Amino acid sequence: MQEEKIMLIGKVKGSVVSTRKCERLVGNKFMIVEVLKQHVQTGGADQIIAIDKIGAGIGDYVLVAQGSAARVGTDMEDAPIDAAIVGIIDEGLGLE
Image 1 (spheres, rainbow, N blue to C red):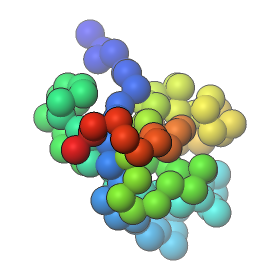
Image 2: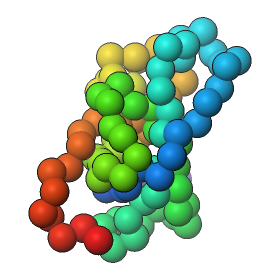
Image 3: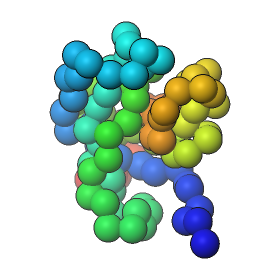
């Protein structure tokens, strides 16, 4: 049985630089996102790599879509994407 993909809340911890990658991913930024455990269970993953098309920065709290929702949310339906930052969360939500 395939695990259901859900939207995650996380904190951007860093970026990933990849000079050689799939042609459909060229020109995109990738971020390391630490998943907040109090908000969702992730099957043991503490951090994920997510494509960032909205300009999140290190330290930002973000919404991350997974699976087909990540590809649709970035208008990259034919790209090999499993996680995408789709929103930056405003301050003052008590996430820390």
